[in-house]
Amino acid sequence: MKTCIPKDREYELFEAANGREGVEMFQTVKPDLVFMDLTMPEIDGYKATEEIKNLDKNAMIVVATADVQPKSLAKVMALGAFTVLKKPPRKQILEDIIDKVETQIEKSSS
Amino acid sequence: MNIEAIALFSDEEKDILQEVMNIAFGNATADLAEMIDIFVVLNVPEIQAMKVNDLSVYFKKNIHDFDKIWALDQKFWGDFSGSGFLIFPARSGKTLIDLFDTGDTEEVESKQIESLEKEVLLEIGNILVGACVGKIAGLLNTNVTYSPPVASQSESKDFSTLVEPFNFNQTAIIMKTVFEFENQHINGLLFLITNQDSIEWLKKALYDYLESFDE
Image 1 (spheres, rainbow over the protein chains, first blue to last red):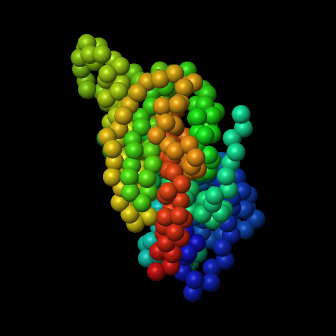
Image 2 (image 1 turned 135 degrees about the vertical axis):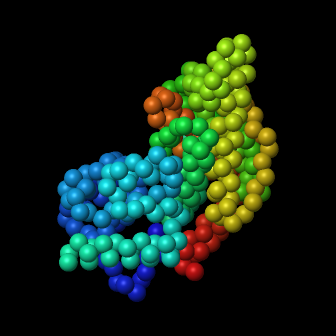
Image 3 (image 1 turned 90 degrees about the horizontal axis):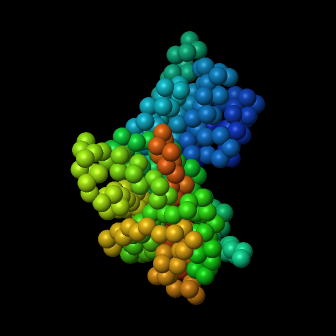
């Protein structure tokens, strides 16, 4: 996943080891974009997405998951995820998603 | 008896293998969801290496909740060789049949339930084990062939038949995933066990896989 993120854009990356840590980190780091796995220890990605959206309804969450069951994808979108990135990620697809997120953030702030 | 864990993989290798297993099982469950209306709750896969001698104890420890089990065993061959085991508690057999509801319960009643359970397990197992192993092989850029799956019901205390095909002097790599069929109260376990002969290939394939993202 990390290797697919464009290096020339100099994003700052923070990594959480599980869902709980991810929610805590969200509050301290306040990132522009969260990549969220679904299968995680402590709390899973559904719960973590829900908690982050409760903390900030405008949080941009891209669910990056291997769980490609239609019901899983529908569930995360209902929780407020921006979109879903199916694993394994491909560079171009990831870059396109980041572009969309940036556009959305610009729109929201203007 | 204690199971002696063997440090066969570096943390990085374990991480990649765990991710590959996660992707593979995720795809396999999506394939299953296409066939039957089911939602599979996935857990983080576990990767472990141990002596084949310890496998029987390992199974006992991991399947202690079930009195009697349905076990599906499917072997695969190639650069990545081994066996896939899908384990369900025997009591979930009837629910598994209902999942493949034919709409004709009388027919279900008239046939031997055990034989139907076996058929359903073969169907589910073929998808979960086959798709999972196939996806791992695909991600790691190789091909595998399969032997036909075999389903059997047995006392959960005896795992000797599952372990028999492995060479007792060798090391086994175990990839385990615990899953749940939501709203059906069915828990199951999927084990992929590969032996020492695949290790060198597997390590190289994992790094090749990682490098493919730099291209």
